[in-house]
Structures are given as structure tokens and as C-alpha cells.
Picture 1: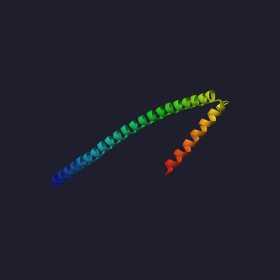
Picture 2 (picture 1 turned 60 degrees about the horizontal axis):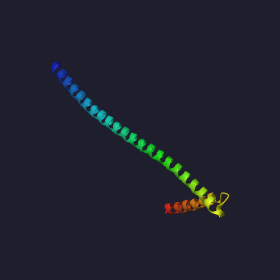
Picture 3 (picture 1 turned 90 degrees about the vertical axis):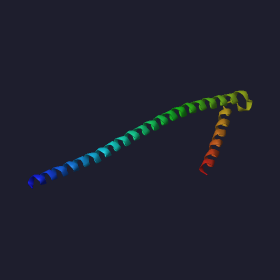
Picture 4 (picture 1 turned 90 degrees about the horizontal axis):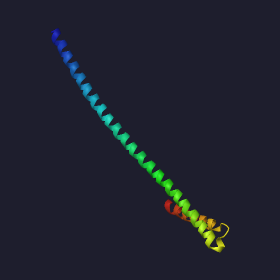
Length: 107
């Protein structure tokens, strides 16, 4: 009877050990897959953010150059805009447009 009990205990121990390894192994595998997917999503999001930031910076520099050129053009071609009034007129127009856009976006 002692050998049978030991054999049954050993069998039960092996069963629970294999069950534990199966459950923990499955959880570990799922966790690794989840972390890998999350890592990939973060990488893609960071890439997109960096691209958008660089493009936004390039666009802002382009807009600044265009506005400065337009202001210079206005100051040089329209006699009443001489002495830098073109810069002021263009700045006020952009400020007005920004205020209207802000008012419309809050609604």
C-alpha cells in the first residue's frame, strides 16, 4: 500500500507540475506576444509623430518665409505701406484670422 500511495502522489505531483507549466507557459507566451505588439505600436506611433513634427517645422519655416516676403513686397510696392507698414498690416490680418479660427474651433 505504501508504494501505491507514493506512486499516486508522484503521479498527482507530475500532473500538477505539467498543469502549472502549461498554464504559466501559456501566460508567458501571451504576455510576450502582448509586449511585442505594444512595442511595435509604440515604435510606429513615435515614427509618425517624428515625421509629423519635422513636416510641421518645415511648413512653419516655409510660411514664415512666405509671410516675410509678402510683407516686404507690400512695403516696397505700395507707397502707403512704406517704412514697414506692410509687416504691420500682414501681422494684423493674420492675428484677425487666428482669432476667428479660434472662435470657430471652440464651438
